[in-house]
Image (cartoon, rainbow, N blue to C red; front, side):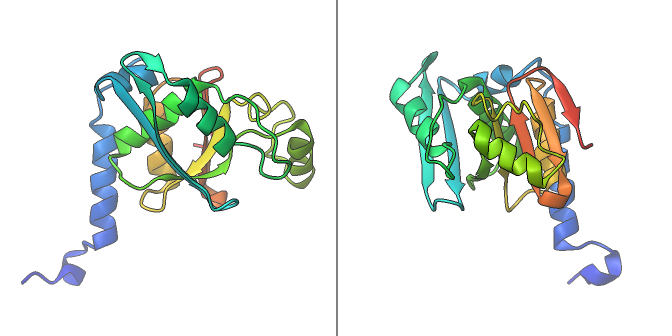
Length: 189
């Protein structure tokens, strides 16, 4: 039997190395959609909301087509929970999140911290934090703030940036990653 303490290896350390290897070994493609092509003709997103207690597990794309009913379900799930208002969520944002999730090779759903935000909610959050953008893509339904219990912010960030398909922000102190379908850019690295 090997004494793990004397060898310097810990279970957490081994898991970190494994997860980093999964992301580093991923093929380089031009965008999230390329990563999803290997998934066949089905795209799925799994999330839960700690704010509302709701769960979402839906196939939103089959055989080259988005499923309108599934996109409506996603839009409602990602609503501004403070005002209960919705705005259509841009499916490209869901594609990026799904592609990053696939790269991370996890079964657990994302925890959604923020999806769509009304201008009023965004202004409220902005008054409390300088890190909230005045013209946030959350207001347009084009962004999501996500986390996973089994993966670090750095691992999620690397997976999302590997998709090369939008904005990715790393918020280590708040334990989440921002993903959006806006211009290609990164911050917080």
